[in-house]
Length: 332
Image (cartoon, rainbow, N blue to C red):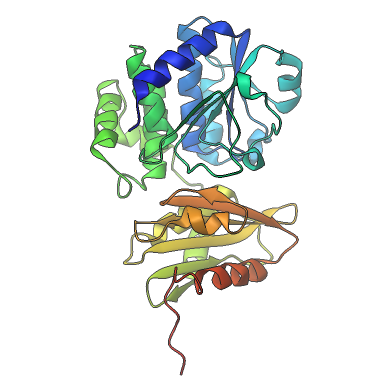
């Protein structure tokens, strides 16, 4: 992991110099995005600075577990919508992006670089926000891992409820500690367990409702395999999925002996999303960047408008074959 001590010093000074802090996870916030945002809010609270977490999506459209986290934490943290953000923002507001670094994945596109800090683990590219403080560590398992290390440097006692949420963030981005796990990750997991988190309680956030679980299993059952190295899931054209359902279907495929998985489905408003996951032989972030998305070696995503699921699948396959991201199937 990159130098957390320098991040601590610089972020602390920026928070203290600001009027207030507004923390922004990415669109369709998942466990890692909301957990790392809550962690930064805890730091701002420790420094006695007014702070708010911006959630630009309707809460009811978010993953079931994320909704549960927001409901549990709304008393201890200020969670605001986009209209409220516009009211709260001042010329000296510090904006902190968590688990994201690109304008296309946030609800605020234009941010003064002198009032912007980024904490992320997804690869930087030419679309990344220009910011006075950028901490992007693609060796970290998750933004939650980075923020928990930061909390430790601030010497803040972390409540057990937030420890469970941060652990859920790490579990999500490591597929339950089965990929992209380093010794740093395990040290952070140990600190969270020592702070009162348990695998059982963190895992409770992943509990699916019956209908959602059925949709995930149907997605998995529709997988096409290319020489058993790459799995591509094509959702039904007439069904709508959440981004989290697509991600969980892709994660599920990694249980098998394949290198990478791509789950494609409609997410509403004429948008088709791809959620990509890999073990280590395929950098799915690179693949998603070729479709105007992003990510890192282990996790990536993109959204395309005005195309069918099949058309998006074909675009993906055209990228994969020439780049040798997949082996060409035998032709008979």
